[in-house]
Image (cartoon, rainbow, N blue to C red):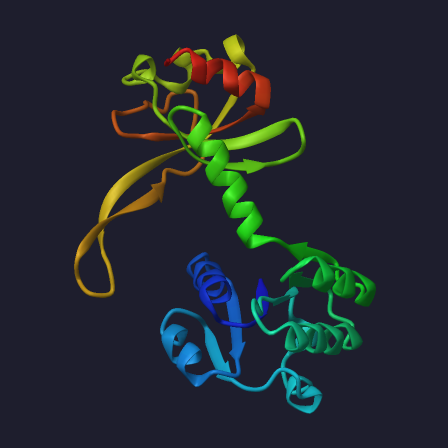
Length: 229
């Protein structure tokens, strides 16, 4: 897929790099040459330009983009102007980051398709991770269902997916296994990195140190986590 991300600060830059690592084409834009230089080796295209200039924006492949993300996080006025410009260009999917409640009201009025709350979402995910033993990360699918990353309970180590009977006993699905592997960073220093196993089968064996990616009803997930307490 092709994405255009406007604003390459901490959030926008990280999002652009992550999407690129997933194999997508990403065009990152920022008025700051320093921010562009910081990510130019991590994303498909990094461009230093003023996105409040509609004539410059019209030179971008907006029609081909699957989504445009306005990730500007500080400049209230610039964010509104850029959001309005891209809205005029009839983008397939326009996503904008919320800076505060007033800003959110304005971009809602402009007519964005989705609104991001990165700080709130990050805090919510951390709160859930801290209160549930063994949980590394979580993602709300709906009000009732969650996807969570959890350290493998000792009772499941050495068992195949089928042998755990986790689906029969708790109505929870194991979506995949994540292994922590050593991977050199840009400085050549080895650091732990997540490696997703892929689609698991009933015969896939769970090993010590594996992280389980689980999907299920929140109450069922809480039940299985309590068994480790």
